[in-house]
Length: 147
Image 1 (spheres, helix red, strand yellow):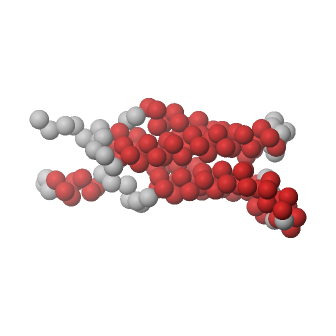
Image 2 (cartoon, rainbow, N blue to C red):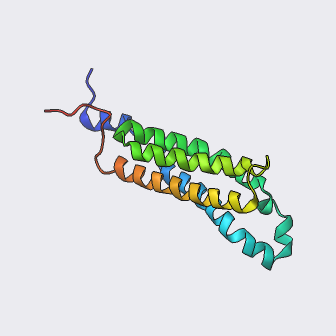
Image 3 (cartoon, rainbow, N blue to C red):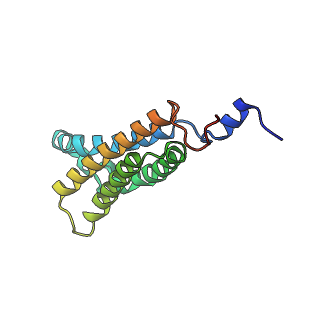
């Protein structure tokens, strides 16, 4: 049985819409955390003892960012097969994971952790933005072209 064209196209869509946006939100939270925390801690000493000031905050954010990114970028790869998106996403996630755990194991200092998180978050956000653009503008290589 052959599905109607509009129905078969819908079955190739990700089951959860907006994953690229959600993943960009996680990246942005990491970025804001790295950039705003020093100012917040200096301005409000109570913030220095909060959960957000804890270095494990990045590790908790990664619990949302990594799976969401893997799913969204995986769905995108299935459709557009653009290596740049995969490389940017992989580098971004790798930098963020290394930063979150490298400081805990003494491989990085606070400045290195902040720098790697910022670079990783930006790379990952760019990967998701490009992934979103390619998925929503007709770059579908998951099905053969009809001639």
